[in-house]
Image 1 (cartoon, rainbow, N blue to C red):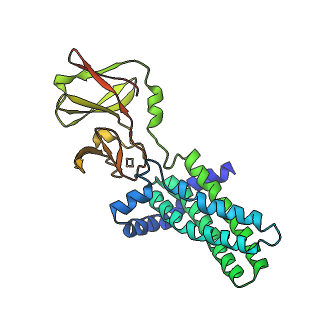
Image 2: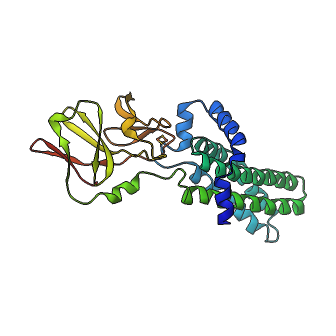
Length: 283
Ligand code: FES
């Protein structure tokens, strides 16, 4: 299985379809606001993994209820809930997928294909049940569960092995030792410009506004892009750093994510000024 997954990550033959689909997703989901909602920016966590709990829970429950006598209506209702709720979960998944790296998109493509087959089988199961063909509905649902389980396995690989949509920067905090660290002289820091420094070999960005200095991890939580090479933009009245790779934006006065594809806030390090020297420490 590991060998299969490694080959899947390297399967360049999937790129033609993947690139076309990526353009189609980006062309369809044009609204920044809609994309941010689907990424889970308002939650501070990716939305897709939360949304899939509903169809997965409903479909597994239907599989159990289908084994019990006299529960046809309950099973039909559960299959219906799972089928309907899978659609918005899939849209959120495609939105995340379109901003992944190539190797992640290859695995994500097969993950989506398996889940699409599962969804089609469940939709057929629902239609059969509503037409009174409960035996066929049960069989189609078990086939759907098999396909959706294969999709879930690939989704787990995407998240836990390939690190898709997990916070890429947070582990940098584990490399910074306790205590205050000097990061530069306040008088030498330019106003409202990004400056990159290191603390224990971890790259951070400094942003001075008056006599306040923000110290933020430089690695973008989405895909490790260099925030130090990003632009500072005013968004909703707040100075934000915009990642040069995929455009995620983070407030420089708190680290909150304001635009995806990142769904996690960026870590800010507390600061103080001692004898004109700016110091930062772990939060
Ligand atoms: S790396 Fe993707 S938005 Fe920063």
